[in-house]
Length: 110
Image 1 (cartoon, helix red, strand yellow):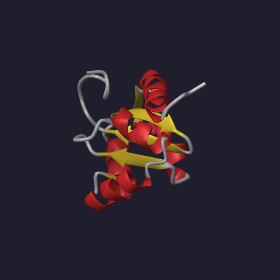
Image 2 (cartoon, rainbow, N blue to C red):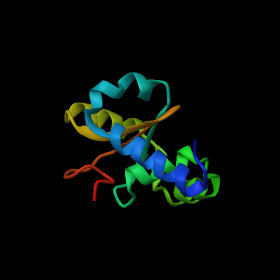
Image 3 (cartoon, rainbow, N blue to C red):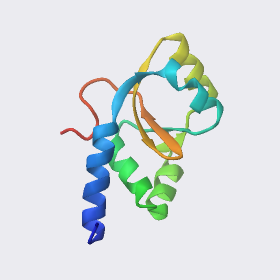
Image 4 (tube, rainbow, N blue to C red):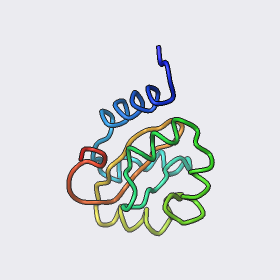
């Protein structure tokens, strides 16, 4: 049982961190075709964004969307990533798949 918002946030962070991994973009084509893939800017922590989605933090998402830090993956990005055989960091925050094109360590691990 989750007793507080802080407990819920910590639980979601552990769950999303455990589920976050690198995946070839080509493996996400079905989800992209359904319009359920969201790109997260590299300036944001992918796991933290997933947590805020899980907490239904609408106000934070409005800010990220307005700033362009969170947005649907564009057709041109999808085509470029497919052509370049790119791998992305991804985490499922149902019904969305959050992705981030970045190199290095897993987002949220530091």
